[in-house]
Image 1 (cartoon, rainbow, N blue to C red):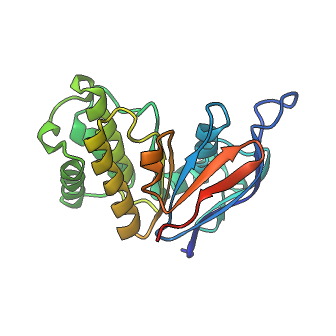
Image 2: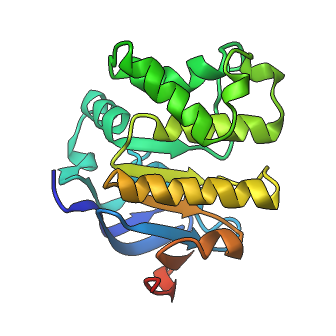
Length: 229
């Protein structure tokens, strides 16, 4: 492992050759414990950026390095294994499996990493408690409210203690009090697990919990606010 968890080098992406680039020349470095918020207008490519950082998409130019591994130099299987081990992703659409229970959904990353009982059960229960849904453990995800599903998605993203947490509007369906609790949890876990994190958000309140706030536009990533005191 390296002190630099994530590094972007001259990253560019366009949807097609005959259209302007969504963004180009992005450079960024995240070290252990750093937590960054990215803001920007709709359509500037914030979700696309997260997909590039997770290796779910490939840039047109530039490199994404995760723990020193160049994602563009890895084949699909190696990228999947690195993402499974090192990335926790809170998707805007959640992607919670409706006919699995809450516990089964949260435990999925541990299952994929072959974490055995009793460790798997202990870590799953701890995360359910941390996001406030321990009472829903046996309920199927299709029976949950939108806010409850969002908590499941966040617990699933954190349960395997990833090196990099990527969250796309992680509090969009939560009330103000619940959102504050979840943002505190994200920040605390990123710091305590020696990882790094990026959240995409339209909420300045959410962004203000980060160490740095960056804005994304076609010209790049620009600081809106520097490191917190």
